[in-house]
Length: 86
Image 1 (cartoon, rainbow, N blue to C red):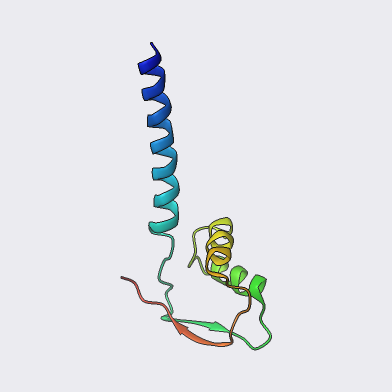
Image 2: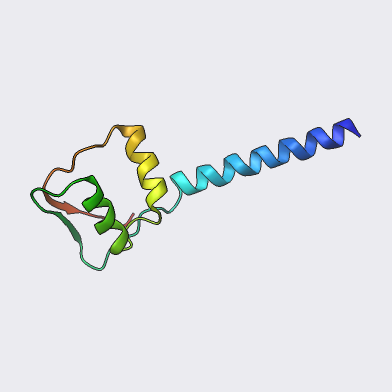
């Protein structure tokens, strides 16, 4: 009985980590109709996140926040960014 419970718990943990990995490393970025994404001068982090979400380039704000915190992204640099579908 203990082996079965341990197996079920292990399977749940693997599924949770698998889902989190798929959400983070999976298809979270989608190429927009336009080939370029523009960040205006004075646009902050929230403006960039809102624009990416409105254009449906990112699939979720929470995952974007988490990924941005992992790489230390805080300030948006104005410019034109090409988004490629790979």
